[in-house]
Length: 175
Image (cartoon, rainbow, N blue to C red; front, top):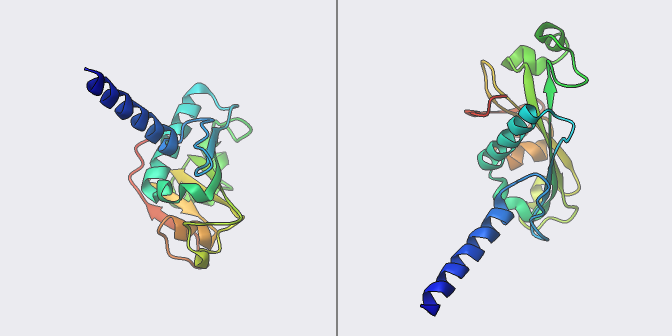
């Protein structure tokens, strides 16, 4: 009986550790080996939920859990038509946002990844140490992830170069 209870306690403890270590929940600190995460507190409840879902998708698609010990912080927010401090119409928003024009993204989740100055897992050749890497996630006629900096492209499996990195992805969150 005691051995059975002990096995259950160990399984629960390990499961809880894995959830805390790899699930990017709002404000969860994953310990010295991983990042803290935050979702913009000024978002509406609906937009906050969408940002959280997109953040989980981003972590899965780009394999952020494999480099978590090199990430200091992850922030997520939203921008686009109807979002606070943004144009209220799609036409107005698309008049200056090329991702809206090129990919059909009228709203997008913006994720900032702060990389530790000293990296252990991320290859030195990526030159990512100390960077804040910004990713844009959207849906439209071309759903996926966009980033501009080469270290950000490399971390998410994109080719480096002068143009934006675009990773087509089936984004299921309702951005």
